[in-house]
Length: 248
Ligand code: SF4
Ligand code: SF4
Image (cartoon, rainbow, N blue to C red; front, side):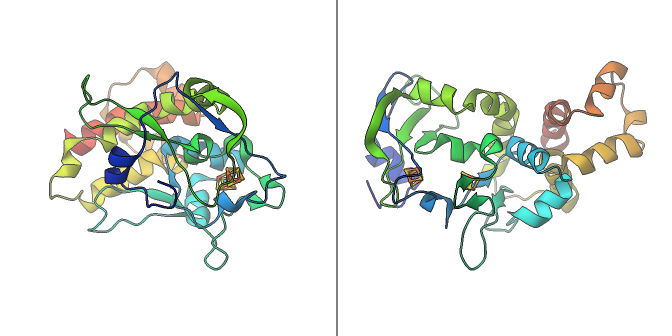
């Protein structure tokens, strides 16, 4: 498996499936010769909650974060809109990597927290076909089979994944919607709404509070006030509304 490109097909064929109580042995340390090599030349897809945490950690507006640190390849070949962390064009390094390690460690994205674990989720889970974890083994990483043994469950807790899973559940449902299987694209207006409500939360907040939006819907006033200062509240509100506005 090592060195082989990770496609859906190779994951299903070649990766041993791991459940919550399965264990693996892994250590990551600044003393390893591979230290921070995993932070270069890598595709890191950002979730809405990743963007929220990072822009908050950097104390910048979501639009500024998206402009300065991300790529959004919305093309016909890529019908599901994604936001990627933009690597340096020449060195290919992550913008947050330093000689000492990750400069945004406390708010690092979901994918960085999970590594070296991956997760495969079927679209329609059933007892015979349900989600599973697997180990990502790459030649660049020398942390495998070193240090202590840990279960999948322990790893997820230690890396703070639960909060990311909770905040990401509605986004996951959005991504797994049948619409994306059809040969259709979102209209430019819907695409912009999707991008704004998922990723550009500060712009979304201005849309909510500085347009006629609130006069068109009956929304509990206390909830509305909760969205004003709280990005996470706003994101939780945005997801079901967005689901409805995109797919009916
Ligand atoms: S965010 Fe941090 S952990 Fe993730 S690739 Fe960048 S430097 Fe590495
Ligand atoms: S390559 Fe693996 S062991 Fe090395 S720093 Fe990255 S995660 Fe840690």
